[in-house]
Image (cartoon, rainbow over all chains, first blue to last red; front, side, top):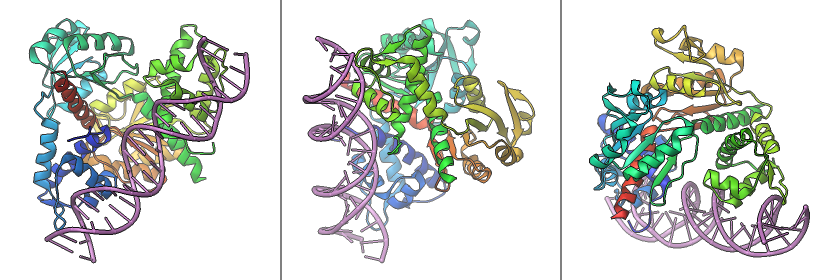
Length: 212
Length: 212
DNA sequence: TGTTGTGAATCTCTTCACAGCT
DNA sequence: AGCTGTGAAGAGATTCACAACA
C-alpha cells in the first residue's frame, strides 16, 4: 500500500464484499473480474485495478477465489482500528438508521445514540442505547469511538460536530445539509438527501426529454 | 447547453441554491466566489466554473447577485420537466424519507408512496398518500411521474425497478444495496448507506492512526 | 481459448494563471 | 486593489491493450 487508496476504490471494495458474501452463501467459490463488474455496474478493468490496490492476486484459470477475496477485503476494512460508531440525532432519520444498521455491517456497530430531547433518551431503540447529548463527549472518550453519524436538524449540525471533535472523533458521516467545519485530520463525508433527489430529478428530466 | 453538465456540478448547484437561500433570508444580496466556496468546502475557481455552466455572469465589483443566482439555479433545475416523485417501500427508511422531504425541496415533491404490505397502505404519512404496489404502474402513468425513490429491502429492489421501468420512469434513486439493472435511457443513482458508513470508518481509522 | 496483471492512453474534473473589468 | 471569466495546465480516475499465463 504505497500510495493512498482513493475514496472510489474504498466504496467499491465495500460493495464487492457484500456481493461476494451473497455469492458465497449461494455456494459459489470463484468469480471472474467481468462477472463481478457486471454485478457492480463497473468494468472488468476497474475490478482488476481495485484488486491491485488490495494486493490480492487471482489466477488466470479460475479468476478470484471468493472466500479469500472476502477475507482480503475484511482485512482491509478491519485494519487494526476500532469499528465503533455513535449516532447523534434520534429523529425520523436517526431511528431509521438505527434500524438499518442493526447487525448490518460486520465492520461497524452503532454503540450509542444521542439526542437533546429528554423524551428520546434513556431507552433502547433497535438494540441501541440512547443518551442525552451531555454524555456524548465522556462516552466517546471512554469507549474510544472514532466514527460518528450526524442526523440532527440543520441548525444543530455544527455544534454537534464541535462536540464530536472535542470528544476526539476521527470520522464523521454528516446527513445534515449544512457543510460542517472541522479541524484538519478529521475525515468528513456528507450525504445530502435533498441534493441527491434533486440530482436524480434533473437527470430524469433530461433523459425524459431525450426520449421525445 | 452545448456540452453535458457533470453530476458533480449538478450536485454543487443544488447545494449552492440552499446556501444562497439561507443568505437571502438573512438579507444578504450579493456574494463573491471565494465566500461561496468557503461555505461549500470548494475552491473559488470551482464556483466560477460552475457559474459558467449555468450561464450566469457576475460582476467583478459585487460578485454574484444572490437573488438572480437563485433564480438561475431554479431555472436550471426546474427546466420544463416534471418534478413529481414516488417512493416505493414504506419501512423505517421510507417513512424517514417522507418526513424529510415533506416540503423540503421546491423542485421535488413526493406524490405517492407504495408498499406491498397491506397494513402500510391506504393512509397518509407525513402528508403523502400510500397505495399498494399494484397501483404503482397506473399511477405513474396517469400522473406522468418521472422520478422514483426505492427504499425496499434488498431482495425486492430489482422487481421494484422493473415495475418502475414498466411505468415509464426516467430516474431512480436507489437506497437498496443491490445494484439494479435498467434499460439504457434511465438514470440511476445509488445511495448505499452501508458503503458510506464503512467508508467513513475506514478513513476515520486511517486518520486515527496517523495521529499517533 | 480465455483469463489476470499492468503500463500507457484517455477521459474527466479541478486548479492555476492571468487578461479584462470596475 | 480585488474581482470575474477563461483557456490551459494539472491531478485523478477509468479504460485500453497486450504480455504472460493456465
